Length: 292
Image 1 (cartoon, rainbow, N blue to C red):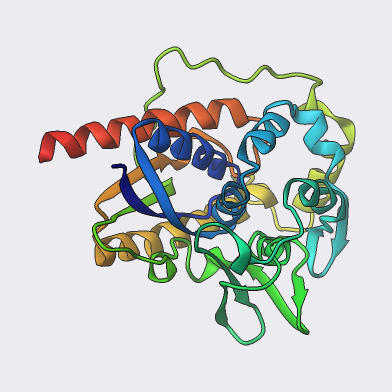
Image 2 (cartoon, rainbow, N blue to C red):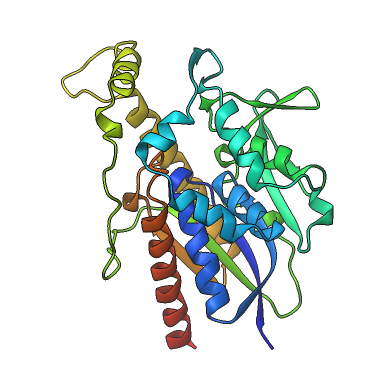
């Protein structure tokens, strides 16, 4: 009989791609995922897994390079976000079937944040895509989602590790995956890095866009780009909330993915992050067996 686990998947941008590898390794090791709660990328990967479309989603992501990612970004300088997200969400909708959360084969929860009323919004029923769209709306990057006249953004600003919402079962193990860990990055053996195809970082449009954003802010002795400023600020916040959550919840298995393993917006690194997820999961499971 397989060991049941209740799985909690954190937010973390592109590092959340490691959730795919974590899930694959857990199943390979004989665990049965009985329920999932996720925020942001954790909500996306967990939701796709719950629908049974993980393999198709993985193949699509693995085929993306930097130029493919850029083509899906519809930049805007609106006051609500830098990316409208229409192109990305249109593609994403192909991977997420039109299904209600309560009709999924396992209990699933996604967390978003009501930016006006400063409170969590928990999706444990209703349209799955709508829940994911709300949960992954990174503030100042994606424009907020609008659900029942409420403006919703990435749930990670309030609850990056939604352990308090995952459904528990008798004799299950609580597994938390934190992809924002401030831990040293240990490269998995034989990891093949993603090729730098199509020169995305040297694309003139991207450089020009970033330069415009950077010029909106005063320049000090050290030039901190707009994107880096957002990323570092969010990272510090997420880490502090995550540490408190993990300490309080005392998971049976904690899988840490170093924040240094991948940039928050490096969505072209799918293959790398999946392998990192597998590697860290295998390491955590070995430590669990040694401590028994």
